[in-house]
Amino acid sequence: MPEKYLIQMNTAKIETVDNVKFYMFGNYASTQDKNGSYTYRYSIQIHSNDMGIKHFVFKNYEISSESTGNKLSDQQAQQLVDDFVKTYRKDAAQLSFQKEAIPTQHIYDPGHVESWVAHPKQDVTFVIMVDVDKGQIIEASFERE
Image (cartoon, rainbow, N blue to C red):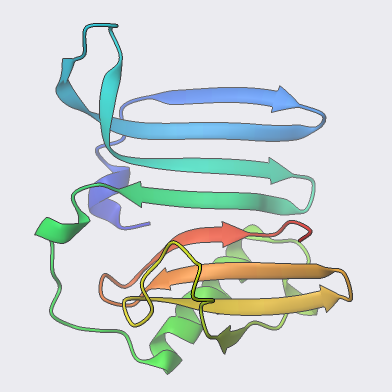
């Protein structure tokens, strides 16, 4: 999570359902709609359980206006993924993520967002999505298929 977003986070919502905690952090636009709801400029959504992060999403709705000009190499993206898993998963030593192509029906554009996948068990696939243009993890899922 880029530091410039972390220092601007101004709200949190925490819920627990069936031993899974949900955390929501967001920075909002300054105006409300007619129903009193705010519009997110960016947000982090985290579901966690006793193993660590179960699902992580970083949504950045200003992403098109920010270009780093430096695309991550596969090696740099792999390091970002490995560091994320080591930091947020207790079972990190048992997980080995490899780059795999994004399926054509996926919501992210290949070439800008790449996927790293681990298959710890036969019926389980873990996926981490890296925006290689921005140098950040935008989604991680440690749930069954």
